[in-house]
Image 1: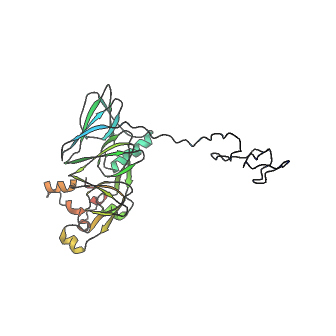
Image 2: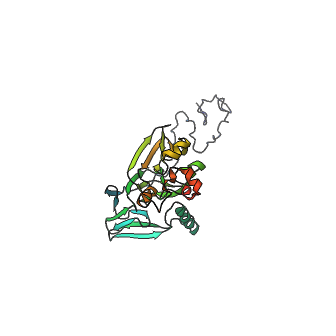
Image 3: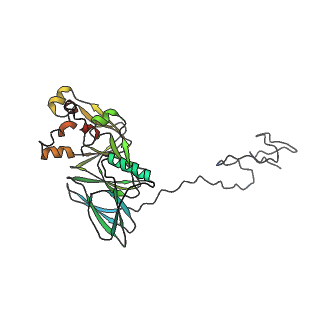
Length: 315
């Protein structure tokens, strides 16, 4: 009793081809790479190798403590060989066995120059400082430059968080920091965050700093949150970021709450700050920062010719 080597159909006696699939008797069936051929009755099936996907990099969890209230400091306990990188000037202290190096990111000279330009657009320095413990466990402390709190994101491989310009504090070496452009003209001009955002992609822990206290929201699909411009700290890329005219001209002129609000539509996580740096500057020195309220009243800013605040964040 004979069977077709392609489809397994029983062949008639003295048959020259299979009546089911048409394969000539004795011919070898062609197999598409990655496909599993039809089994032949009584034959031992051969294992077809599955497609190979490289495993996600294993990232050692970062040990840290955050101390303080509105003048917080992050104390990082580095294991031997563990590396973090930070914005220049944000380190407060380090143990003697922590080695630090200032360098540009990228392999070639062109990549390093492009990376430096991107960092300047994001409000960061040209160089990052890298910290690595040698000869045992080490400790490094980081803090922001003005009163505020430190927010931590433990990102999985490929997970991304969008952060306001100048918000980055430090992160594990496995985290990628890149530039993100606001695609909508209105959101870039009137959203209070400027056209430039920071995109941080895991795996690894990310630490950001923003003013005042922080409020954390988890928006459901279609849920809308309206925010005073300049108070947005970070949001997940699934959140739709735009601006919307929500008040009347009378409210904008006399109410002090502005004509436009930043509109965030879920799903995704959103983090807000209670105090912007520009507002803090205005309260401390009103005469030196008369335009601190432009994020609330962009029409008055346009009337004065103050376009610079539209292309950068409050920081």
